Length: 457
Image (cartoon, rainbow, N blue to C red):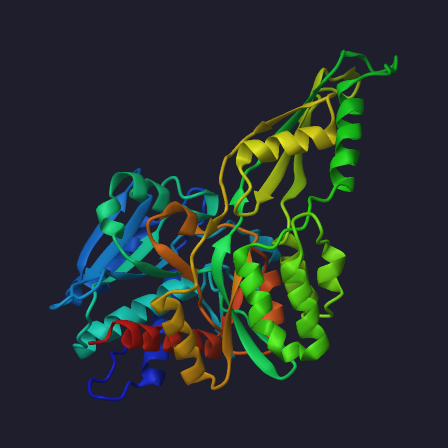
């Protein structure tokens, strides 16, 4: 493994190579969840951290499901620690759909292939490379630096960050953290904006149950469980929850507004001044924001609560009318919406012929961008990409940020504004996942410069 040079100037090419080497090794460790088996990846990382002088511990919520916590102590701390975090598990793969071995870590041209290349072993490798470089160079920090690499993010964090927060919170005692979830670069009227996740929706999932009389399918009945569920499903899919602007979305629009021209700025001001219930998605779409479809779909999802039907259970024989049909719904609610309120609202939408219950009760979360750490993120981006701005935003999915509520978590691992930004989303959780090495190098440099800028003494 290559090591960094000591001295006053950072060798970013060497740093990028270290991140590449670590990512390639991590991609070759199969941590598909289920079953996870993240301890094998934690063991790999622990060896480097211990050799570099980190206080290192692997914590298993259950055998094989290890999370790694490594702390580089500051000789003279003047503030609470900062944390670099990501997850070690990856989603499962359909091997026959991949052009290359999903756990081969193959380099093809300037791309590194493998499950986790984008979600999110690339961030693990970059954070590890940065922390080791800081230790190797003997840089003095005014805060402790914590690496926290969690198991089980892909299925909720019950064996990872969530378990650690409940059972070993002292290991996660940080003021700020960098996590996955942001860093996408957008070009708006010749201005570059990087989106920084400062909040996310909560997964308050639902189960809709319909019951009716069973019978022989050769004798049709008028009021069956299937009929009731069908009507409920039609109502649910025809319904759209009210549009609401959370603080991250408001700040994103405020940040972007100055480059939209006088008319665009006035329209944004009007939207921000709208009272509850006055705003619609058509109002936002009318801004004519020069975003691609992926970003517009994200914005639409993060300006309302959503209920997406995903799984149907019911029936056991083709000639039997079932007495019960169950529909599972992936519900995602904005910060400010309470799970019980959400359940009641969906019940009103689908009607009295079925019952709605909560399968999970997560609320949305927010991290205030008005902080010295967010300012350091923005200043670091401006130094690397002069003139670029950082805009807060809300994500529709979930990350481990929700499992460490005592830490101000910002999702930010930036890539430069290239066409690859539009290619990557389809590869996350998809086939042929891969990352361009220039993007890995860019994100790694950013993290190094951020830590030195914010915590360097």
